[in-house]
Length: 467
Image (cartoon, rainbow, N blue to C red; front, side, top):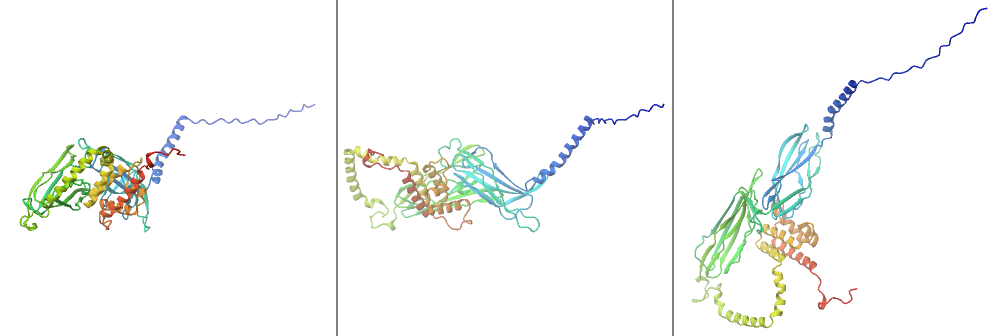
């Protein structure tokens, strides 16, 4: 009997997978290749996103400057293409600062930044602070026109500058001056036509005073005072400004002309003229003085009304009746003053306060400048007057004045005044009318003062029942 064989069943065994172990050396090599690829691709990525137009703005000198010192505002436009046409600058009005563009065309150059070549066009403005203080130049737009690719028309690009700060101080010893010339050298000359010598009643003499300095435009020179002189007619002319520019450097010149007419015989003294200026080279306050001139005026026989009669210009012909009248009036006034001195003191109190009013004093300076047809003196007086009439937190500007008064005539003449000073007559051929400007300003002044004036209380007593 055969024994049956036992059949073995072979069961499949589970396969165990051994995890692959990456050596630290291979891991470091992979990380190194990854970083190398990023380093090679990063410049291409940055270059692709680099802007094709840029703007760069700088101040020279930096930091605090002196009142009247030239500060150069340099604006550099940058593009990867080429420039076409003239750029436009929306430089805002800066209270108490004269701003003028230097040169008509920009200075072209090239510059490479991060491997990209830019065409650079530089433009400069000269700023002159006329009053001490810190001012912020708000960001403003600059519009320029890079050429397009191929035959495409130029593109219209507008970039905005960053906010800038201009801080100006009066140098030691000049704190009480209204304006100051800051330069390294000042030249002052004067001429008389005809030469000063003994004169007769009716003779006229023309005096010309010329101020010349580097890095100071003619419009930035402070106006010279025109004092009243007894028995002399004084007729100032509009100052003549002659500036010369050479590659960003310029020399300013201002000539003031005054004609004097002798109206009565006697001794006449023309007072000395003192001009203060700050020497930037030696950091020192200096003065230029034109000496006083004395003139003896004789009677003019051609202007005599009779053989022994004095000149009609002389007050002696009317001396006797006027002395009697004035003597009688003076005696009456003295008697009334003693009798009613208390009432008189109350009456003149408002006039005393008005004499101390800085607003009235500054407005008088504007009137004098307008009579002399001096746009620079009128603008300087206007800035000081705005400081006395304005009480808000923001700085006083012509834009604020136009908004407050809503006077189209004043806005028109103020725009002409600024155009005359800062752009030149070639930009605005219409002349600045000093008379129209002062009349419009007087109208706006009355409205402003009336608005600020507190209401009067009837009978001097408040209401018993305010509600």
